[in-house]
Image 1: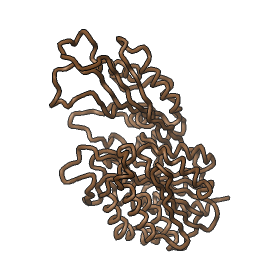
Image 2 (image 1 turned 60 degrees about the vertical axis):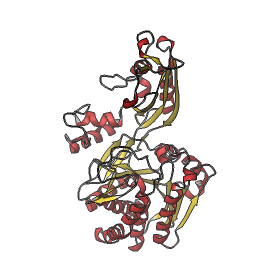
Image 3 (image 1 turned 90 degrees about the vertical axis):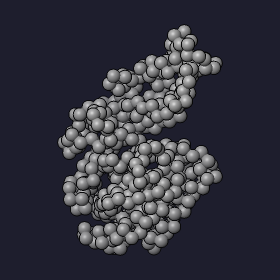
Image 4 (image 1 turned 180 degrees about the vertical axis):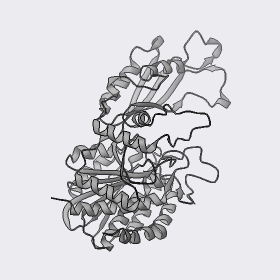
Length: 467
């Protein structure tokens, strides 16, 4: 396999076919089920599936089989089988559902109106990770066009990831015979620290979350009564202090913490050396990050727990807030957990800490509804480590780098448990300022093309690996 042969297939396909298709995909507001409970009635998810399926069918080679699988009451799943020169299996993964719009898109940009500016394609869900199906088929097409053998490959594109992938286990069970027991899993839903080399994700944080509700009054009353009855927001604040140090953000309880493995610490120090003082955060002028130490910064976002308040109820807009002591405060909590932390145990501990003996006898409830284990990569086989590094040097011009991801991909923990002997290549295009889930999300097009070529090489090397 030569660099030029793969490039000759991949780059023109991206330019003439994939980018236009992604622009069309970016116009579809197919928000994940957690953000659009009436997704089936609205039809946006089906539109996105139809678009991807139409493109895939037009670019599949002989012998490939595509199905849209549907389980009653669940989001659809696209599965594509590509025959290979052996019955060894590779599983490739991506998703097509999207996060909601989010406020703050700069002038000239809109979540549902894709715009190309230089090397960037802006739009919701394109980098996270609507590009994945296109990249998988392009990689396999490059191998087939150059008569390079590969194992049997199965591509699955789900439509529930941004809601926690709770539909996916049902499809994995249903399609177990078609998926088989892959010896390699390639997932394209991750990120990169820069756009200059291939980045392999070696860990993912878990997640525990839910809704905290604090009630003290049966109805709102004039704030002249303040001082006689506690403000519900103050009670919520005190309860959160049981979990998080408000001064530092540290979460000290043992239920939320693990020891960082030695091999991950080595990778973190190497990634910190590449990052230096860069952090890629859109901080306002004069605002400092929690720490400027790159090692500590990476640890904080990959192997340490962190609490965030995602939303609130019971608080009127500031412009319409009367002088009233509100009857309740409701907060949406998200706790990112270290990769090896038991999410179920952590969730139970959150509930215990928040509900036990509330101040003033306030009526407090914590209703968990978000839970996922993190993932720590198994040791890399020598052939895979070498293949990814060679691919990075060939198509990016720099060596492979490793990173932990602060987000969660529930599918990885599930697959790691289901296929303990599999190797994992977890990678993606979400680099500095690409802003997945936030405003101004973009796909860095050169990185997407280079990554597609790297995937092709790894699939080819998998076939040639030592027995």
